[in-house]
Image 1 (cartoon, protein in one colour):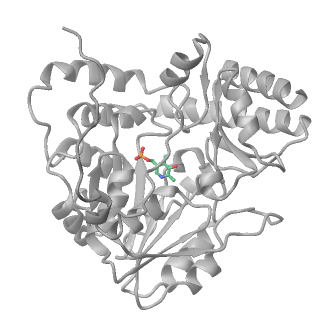
Image 2: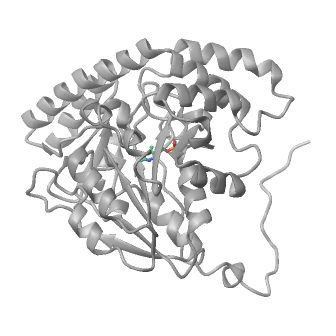
Length: 384
Ligand SMILES: *Cc1c(COP(=O)(O)O)cnc(C)c1O
C-alpha cells in the first residue's frame, strides 16, 4: 500500500494562534544548525563538513559508545527516573552532594525548568544581547519580560561579550532570573572569575543567577575557577553543564544543573518523570570516566583553533577571541551569501543573524581534515 502525503484540509473556524498562551504567540522556534543528512539529500554531495553546532569532531569516548551499545538491550524498561548512578558520578566528579545535581534532557531542558520553576509573566529575566538564544525563548514562553543588556562594544577586549555592569543595572525588583554563558555562545567571549563572582555576590537575594558553562571543558582558564566552586557561598547560584559539547554526546541529550539542594528540589517538581533517557544516562557515566578522551578533545581544539585563527587572518578576516570550540568570524558585510556559497560546496557553518550579528558566521573547530576543507572552500568563496 502506498500513501501520498497527507493533505491538511481541516476547516478551522478559529485560528489556534488566538488560543495560544500570550508568551507563545509570536514566539519563533529555535533555529538549529543545518543537519548534514539534509544537505546530503539536497546536493547529493559525498564529503560534507558540518561545523555548525559546536559538537566534538572526535565524537564521544569509546567507553561511552560501548556503554550505550550495551544498554540497547535494556531499552524496553524505563530509565531510572532519578538518575541515581549519573548523579552520584557527577557529584563525585565535581565534589558536590548528589542533592545539588539536577539532570536534564540536554542543558536546554534545565534552562527551561529554571524558567518554569521560578518565573511568572509578572517577572523579568535579564541576559545580554548576543547570548545563547534559549534564554530569550525560555523567558518568552512563560510570558515574562526579557531585559536585554547591551553587549561590550566591537572594539573592546571581549567584543560583543557580556557587559556585567550593564546587566547589573537591569536587575530590579521584578527580576527573578539572570542568564549568562561563560564562555558565551555565539561570541566565544569569556568573563574573568573575579569580575563574575563579584557580579554574583552583589545580586539581591530574590534573583537566581544561572551561569551556563556549556563550553567550560574547553576553557582551561575558566575551569580552574569554574563557578561550581562558588555554589556553597551563593544559594541563588545555578551552574549548568552539558554532555553535548566536549563530551561528544549531543545526540543523546544529557545536561546538568548544579545548585543549592533547595533549587534542585524545586526543579525536580516541574521536570518530566523520565527526562533523561536510558542510553544518555549510561553513556554519560562512562564519558565522565574517560578523562583521556576529554584531554585529547581539548588539545585537538586548542591546536586547530590556533591554526584556524591564523588561516582566517591570512584571508584578511577578523575573529572574536574564543574560549570555546568555535570561532566567530567577521565578514564586515552581510554574511548570508558567504554561508550559502559555502553550503553549496558542502561546508555547513552557522549564520547568526538571529543573534543580531548578521556580518558574522560562527564556525566550529573541526578535525584537521575538516578544517583544511573549510579553509579551501572559504578561500574559493571569497575569491568569487
Ligand atoms: C550548546 C549549548 C548548550 C547545550 O545545549 P544542550 O541542550 O545541552 O545540548 C547550552 N548552552 C550553550 C551556551 C550552548 O552553546
